[in-house]
Length: 136
Image 1 (tube, helix red, strand yellow):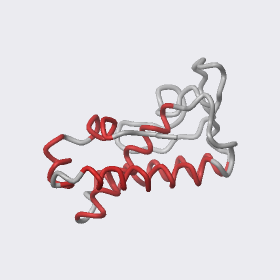
Image 2: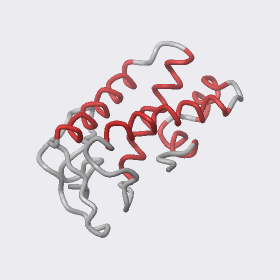
Image 3: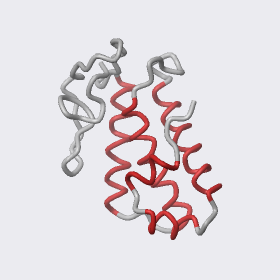
């Protein structure tokens, strides 16, 4: 199951930066995405039957963040802003495993998650307006 694509990465990483990291080798992107998907699946499948249906689109955003970090890690040091994003995603995944963040699959209806939230800049993973909004 594809959790994210190169186009998802392009939404969060400027094309110029992406090209500097991959130097025209899109297999690097595929590898980074595969590793990120494995990480997300490994955590989420500890709590939920995999594959999820319907699929929480917000997990795709989390996977894209991890994939960007994988690209930086394979090329150079991960910039601090991406380290914080990665920590944010990993904290949320740990919350899913612990059961403090839950994924609702209520026929696509938006419902707030538990009160769990991890601060990272202006984004939140859970709660109203968070990346996992609608999954409890």
